[in-house]
Amino acid sequence: MPLIRFPKLLALCLVPVLAAAGLRAAGAQAFPSKPITIVVPYAPGATDGQARQLAEVASRELGQPIVVESRDGAGGAIGAGFVAKSKPDGYTILYAAPAVVTVAPLVGNAPYRYEDLRGLARASVTPHLLAARIDAPFKTLPELLAYAKANPGKVTFGSPGNGTAVHLAGEAFAEAAGIKLSHVPYRGLAPAVTAASGGFVDLVLGAPGTINTQIQGGRLRALAQFGATRTDELAAIPTLKEAGVDLSLRADFGLFVPKGTPDEVMKKLSAAFAAAVQSESFRNFVTRDLVAPAYLPPADYQRVVDEERDIYARVVPKLSLDAK
Image (cartoon, rainbow, N blue to C red; front, side, top):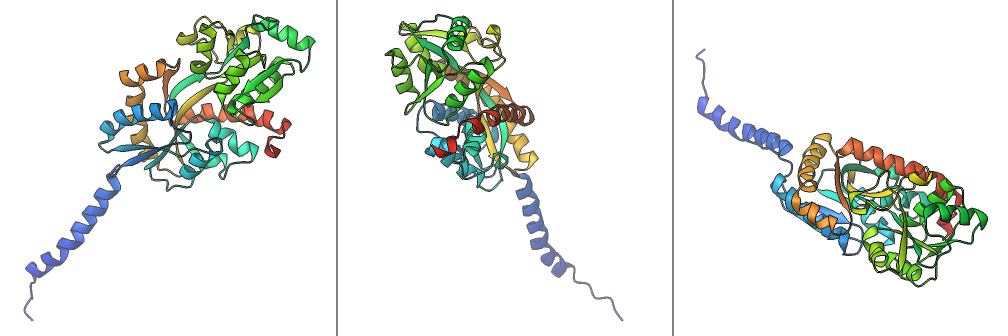
């Protein structure tokens, strides 16, 4: 029986099969192949400004546009929840302080778990700054500690609100120092700073950019910064540890992705944002607010976030915040 050959027909049949296989292989390797969104869970301001600076450089590294979108509300839980529930494909990223990941689930007002978000890259470090009203009966941190121990609960401190990272930082400070402080919540850090400047509370703590203006104006007195070491931007202000208080807390702003995001995708994203954090444009932008650029890769950043959560996990159960 003669051998029947169909070379042209076979080739025509194989072309679409091979083409489809090639497209699938290319698609699997093509991240990113569409625009990326960075979600900022706060109202427009300094944080989304930082995110836009990062997006500008990272988009060039990745070859795709990066859109910055604000989804504020519930102390950051709305935006963080949106990212936590997004598809873990690298196209939806959160830019925030770790508090939206570490604190919100602990106080019971977050529609996600701590494990639902994964650290991608640290971008900057903002040490909490502790300041006192200018006429307070103490002028240094050791004097504050002595006064507070002699007058339990008499010293008041203002924060941006119940259950915020700043509130918990104040409680963690009191616990580590062995003193009792009385908390006064306000609707944001700016009103808390105003209250301290006006003498309505004894202490205020939070981001140095907001507080330092009042210190320079002579309306507040700097007592301590909460970082492990003095930052260049606040070199004249001692740390808590220098006064014997074994605590270091700061806002390690960075990027988070949903759990399950592939390691290869995270590697590409982290490399792009490393270039962005280390860029001159980002450094110039954040140092104006006394913030230091401080890149960390995924595993190292996740360790920082885990350590912060361990601190707050000890503090939160004592405060009954979920009822407030």
